[in-house]
Image (cartoon, rainbow, N blue to C red; front, top):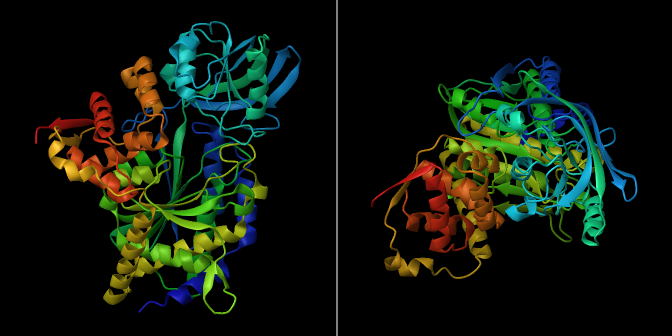
Amino acid sequence: MVNISNIYNSLESFYSKQELLWMISSISRFHRIQGSSELEKAVDYIAENLLDLENFEIKTYRFSYGERYGIHYDIVGWDVEDGFVSIVKPKHKILSRFLSSKTAVVAHSPKGDVEAEVVYVADGLDINRYRDVDDKIVLSYGSPYMVYRTGCRFGASGFIFFKKDAYEEAVPYIGLFLSREDTKTCKAPAVSISRHAAIHIINSIEKGHKVVARIYVESSFRAEAYIPVLELSLGDGEREIHAYAHICHPAGTVNDNVSGVVALIELAKAIDKALNKDRISHPRYRKIMFVLFPEYYGPLPYLLEKTKFSDIEFSINLDMIGERQWITNSTLHFISPPTILSNKLYEGLILKLLNYSLCKVSTFSSSIKTLSYRFDVVPYDSGSDHDVYLQFQIPSVMINQWPDTYYHTDMDTIDKFDPEITSYISIAIGVAIYTQSLNQLSESTKKDIEDMYTHIIEGYRELRKEKEDTIFKKAEDIEDTAIYRYVGPKGIISVRHLYNYIGFEDVLNIMSDLENKFMYHLFSRYIPLILLVRPMNIYEIARHIEQDYGKSIAFKDIKKILNYLYRMGIIVKDQG
């Protein structure tokens, strides 16, 4: 039988926190924007760094950003050299510049040099606010693609974006994800500024002052750009276990998500050394796969190809795991998949090992060890690559720290990175994966783990249930008896997809209707996902929501979401 403690100690003894810091410093130097040459160089750099591994097979996939995969549109290849934004009137002031902040130029912004009056459109959901943007610069905190496309439609000459919920002094990371077709009609440059700078502009405009700004962007579109996917494979067997992390995002930023990338790199090195020293044996029952790719646009073509010939049994997403919690104000989250896609053995084993790895101190008067970090268990939450794995009906958990005060800003820097917690998480994940690759847990141990996990998850859901459920006591009142079925291609529903499929005016209505984050999550991720697993009626959909989130959603709101998905051609309805 497998000795999990010995495996943990073996991996821990070969895991180098110093190398974590070296790698995170090296990789974060690359401006890893999707479609950029720097992203390709970063993956090449990592692949070269891993050539010394003796037990892993390394394979690089290249997919084209110029092609459409599933519902994901193409992305134009793009590189940036320089850029800045400044106030010209009433008083000259530099607001942000690429030289000091790699987030200052909005990703995929066209080149340009414009000087014009600034018009504030807030969240960009009121079409009337665009009536006066012709030959002017738009200031907004709204959905970047939607605001940009709409503003260009009304003749805006430039765009300044900020985020209402970002740290006040930080310059946020904004991306447009333009297609080649978009660039034919959208020529305006776009930049990003801090919330602090935006508030000053808004206050001046509201006081009746005319604010004139200058935007300068030196960038270029690339004829061809490829989606790099790096795969490390270890072991034998027909089934695979995947651990993965996305490698994209601006230079200088660390926790999102160089932290997840370096955790897997160092884990691979530790396993390789342990094998070379005969501290652990070669996995024979399941293959271990570590995969690095750009977010969303990497896993979709990769899995479309991979699942043709591979049986992926389980997967783990490492995204933003390295926070110094006392600086970023974050909590480590174990994010489970929807119940309909749960694998209790894998999830329970990972949760148990994370708890073991993060418990570092004893209580005052006993030998019981307690958690040294903020740690929580939460139901399925979207926003990263596990969304794509789940669409292929591959059970997947995400390990993630949230919230992060400096998320998606130029202040997500190496001083907020904690090599200690990164190593604890990485080793725990490695032990879980390796243990399952051996298939040596006894049946009684497996049952104990599954029972433990069931009790924990059910207990958490009961603890957090908002109120006594009443929605199902009036099942006879439901008039909609249709069965809803997912028929669309795989991929993540985005504002960009909505804008191109149903038009900008309808998108404005949808965004207004689904302004609540949870409702948008149900619309863009959760409901399409569970309908992809199997067809359901509205009653079953509501029951799954209540089961996973402990809250009841009104049937009229679910019906509204289903109508939107139906109009988009994502689902069809059959009479029940």
